[in-house]
Amino acid sequence: MARTQGSHSDITGPRIRAAALGLFARHGFAAVSMRQIAGAVGVQAGALYNYTPDKQTLLYELMRGHLNDLLAARAAEMPGADPMARLENFTRFHIRFHIERPDEVFIAYMELRNLEPANFTEIERLRRAYEDELETILRDGVKSGVFAVSDPRIVTYAVIAMLNGVNTWYRAGGRLSLEEVEALYWDMVRKSVSA
Amino acid sequence: MARTQGSHSDITGPRIRAAALGLFARHGFAAVSMRQIAGAVGVQAGALYNYTPDKQTLLYELMRGHLNDLLAARAAEMPGADPMARLENFTRFHIRFHIERPDEVFIAYMELRNLEPANFTEIERLRRAYEDELETILRDGVKSGVFAVSDPRIVTYAVIAMLNGVNTWYRAGGRLSLEEVEALYWDMVRKSVSA
DNA sequence: GTCTATAGGAGGATAGAC
DNA sequence: GTCTATCCTCCTATAGAC
Image (cartoon, rainbow over all chains, first blue to last red; front, side, top):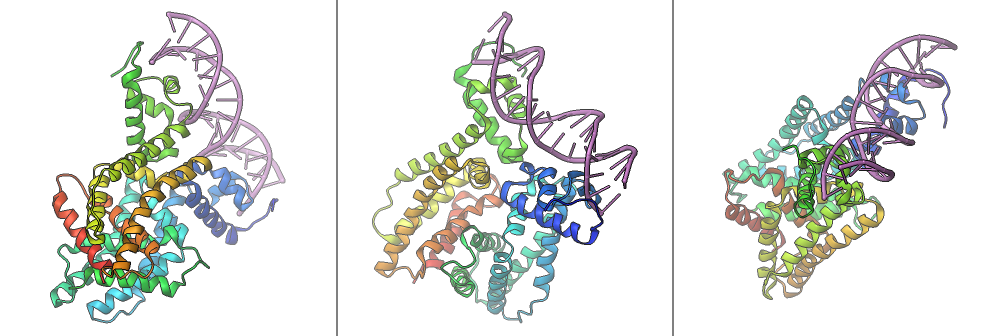
């Protein structure tokens, strides 16, 4: 795959992001060199700087892109008005979205400490916006009496932590289908917050 | 804190481990240099090699020590025979143990990918031994009819993921006491697996 | 847009003096 | 046991040719 000279701006950019994503997820941001990324794409290290001003920005853009995708996909859902139905929709959506993007999810949680302060603040803002919807669902369900949740913020963290755990064991083509995974976690989430 | 020559083998070893623990947790194994660790202890980089053959072993020993502490502390618990009582004991023990050691827990989960294969295998074996107890509790509770759990292995992962989430938000001296945190998570765990 | 070449520094680890 | 000095490798990022 050794590449000689030529112009490929339309495809090299996405290939760099894809290579960086996989390498960061597998080895960690700090452990991956720009030479490794370039090697995976088939260009020299210097060529990467036509697409990113530096390594930090490459990481930041990957995380920001992932969280923007998450918020956009979530905004496209139509969960209705009933808190229980909204919680089920949120749970199934979360599992489905995250299970399809293990590398992005891994990086977005593991590489926070490698973000410069300004970048960290923005990523946390986006994540917070996503978590806030779940907290609102829980509060609405408490009001209407279907949920028994003493501390909606903490329960939000607990539910999301449980759901994110899927990515530590799930492998496509494994013992359980996506529908079975969704059903199993929805059963646990429903029971854990129900009145 | 600049140190001149002298012999301090009894205290330098623990101080190196403590410094490495804090730095690895804050910045990540790959992002921390041996010079940084030495600087935090107040020695020169070369002196570290009187205590560890290399950086990799330093990480491995930290993780192995943590998991051995975990298994020893767990073995000292006397949870009784009833599955529900054992699950409550496991839940409260897990939160209490992990909330007191945020750096160790963080490293033991985040730096797995920086372990050499042989070290990784051993760490996973220790973690697996801990998880197996929870799975056994769930299976016993299903047999006796107090738990409704379709897949004990997956529910084990889900419960542990939820409990580990404590460390992402808990801060000593915060809004909730340890007892309140334990009660909140135990309420969720109990409901999520109950028949 | 990609290449080669390199600046300029930091990394892990070791040798030998004290 | 710690220090200083150093080896050798690797790093990010840039400069200028094609």
